[in-house]
Amino acid sequence: MVFERRLLLRDRGTGVLEKLWLIPWSFVLLLCAVAAVGYVALYSAGGGAPEPYASRHALRFGFGLVMMLSIAMIDIRLIARLSWLGYLAGVGLLVLVALHGQVGKGAQRWIELGPIQLQPSELMKIMLVLALAHWFHRASWERAGNPLFLLPPILATLIPVGLILKQPNLGTGLITLMIGGAVFWAAGVRWWKFAILIGAAAVIAPIAYEHLHDYQRARINTFLDPESDPLGAGYNIIQSKIALGSGGIWGKGFLQGTQGHLNFLPEKQTDFIFTMLAEEFGLVGAMTTLVLLSLVVFFALAVALRCRHQYGRLVALGLGVNYFMYVFVNIAMVTGSIPVGGVPLPLISHGGSAMLTSMLGFGLLMSVHVHRDAEFGAARE
Image (cartoon, rainbow, N blue to C red; front, side, top):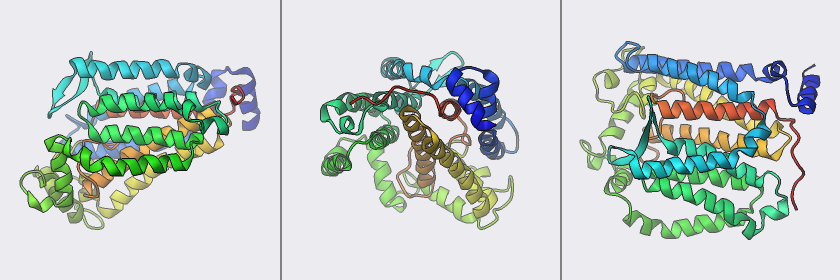
């Protein structure tokens, strides 16, 4: 029955009821579960009250849920045709940030769009995935290995990365570069080309270190030796580790976390929200949260594997890598595995831009799933 509906959808390309039937409602419930974890954590971060964090989180997720389901109904071939337009809009927003963006904590990363404070670098990661997927989706294996064919997508990746680094936002810039690299790899770009780039990066890394901003060098030095400045640059990660360890196996209990509620834990509603969860719900709560987040990534990979067209496969993989990088960088950051940077935990941390872009990405992912049998043109030689 489901297969017949998929054939009907592929042949006709229309039918809202048919598309609703194909929506993976189990994935929607999974996202609701992750957002519920975020609500509980933000309720605690607000001192045991829905304001100022939890209630806004719920409203944003509700709006994002409607947006996600609406995007899932859009034919993936229409999205493909608009890919480069979205890319140009993303680059335009980054240029607008460079010219008129708001400055906060020494960085110029945000712009005001009515009641919304948007961080275009988060949106740009998704637009880059769509643009690269469109470029590669009809390229044959031979063409994907042609250096001249790779030049335009390389430039398309480096332009937004450069604008993001200028803000400055080293963490997001590197993540954007890795997401682009993942799409290149999935499209068939040869592994030895990546090896050359990684080797070149290792050579210029010491030179690049000398050109970093002072606070960026301080983050790296603190990562290597946080106890060297326990009341300054090393304070955040030291307090995070204390909170993580004090939670034990079962945690101190809901609303009973001392590091968070006595304000030792910095940015507990955003960057260090996972630490607050681990302190109050212990290793069990932390691992449960990681399992939920991992299932989201696995769904994206499953969509990529089941999709019949290359565009959808590349989009699903790129969006999956994007979400994985959110989770990996945030968890590694609060555990002291990498230098501290401003990367939120998607659907859990407080923040409008992260929620909006996450739900946009999930909507596109679901559109790939719903239209996984759509007919695209043959590969170009």
